[in-house]
Amino acid sequence: MRLPGGDDLRKTMVILVLTGLVGCVEVSPVPESVVVKRTQMHMGTLVSITAVASQKKVAQGAIQAGFDEIKRLERLLSTWIPASELSHVNAAAGRHPVEVSRETLDIVARSIEIARLTQGGFNIAVGPAVDLWSVTERQYIPSDVELDQLKTLVDWTNIQLNRDARTIFLPREGMRIDVGGIGKGYAADHAVIEMKRAGAQGGVVALSGDIKTFGTLPDAKGFPVGINHPREEGALIAVIDLKDEAISTAGDYERFFERDGVRYHHILDPQTLRPARGCQSVTVVAKEGTMADGLDTGIFVLGPERGMALVERLPHVEAIIIDDEGQMTVSSGLRDRLRVP
Image (tube, rainbow, N blue to C red; front, side, top):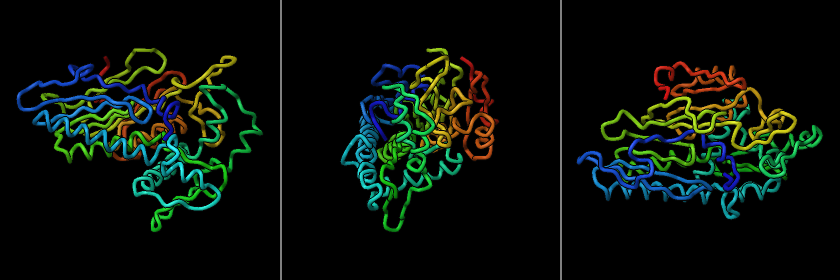
């Protein structure tokens, strides 16, 4: 989970459209419930947490519990923090396994699970290639020779987990893993668990564009979330009400440069180590933020046809895919839920 300039920059395409809450700190729509919202900076992005509870004090406590959990996970998982567990795993690449917490082992295991589902489209080991491209800084186009030299370092199948010893081992020096493409969804899931324990009846955890909801707003069916157009700034393609669901988007429009009429973006196909072609954006709705966050990138790499075929096979997963021509495809379970603004 890298922070400034990390993979989270692709996540600004999904926005909350909570009428009466945007820009507000506290709202009390009805006497029986209180809605409180707070925003802080964590994981290199703005994190907004909204809680619905019977009392203001309970809502505030639930929000603090959510922020505390996000901060705890950040200290474990951020590769921008030298003392984090994943930083230690990367530093020991090619030398020895590193014992880690249950959470660190869990998120890496979940990452490998999603890599398998997406035929390697989602890959937490692809960082060395992302750095070589340096899309937001040097805007460098690597040669085939340079990319071929990285192939052994970005092979996610080489990541070794020992569940009994609770260790992670990267067998080749120069390998490293980064859970930035799944970590915010994972953190949102865990923050929601802590908010429920603290007494919240409903709420939203939004880490940039990775959003996890539970329960509902007072007198509402769910939490309305807008999905931005990947080519028209400020325009929404749809609005959906979420209830006990998460949403996440991968797009080619946040970190990119153009040269000779070609758009080079940061979502790399791990097979070619070049920008994945075929999609402008992929939005995934799932029960878990972890699944939504990891799948959107993997489906983007798979492309519209294979990506939607995967979605239709998975339980409790839906998607909106906009292909490279701007055509939108919506999964079968989502078609009746979308509202055009």
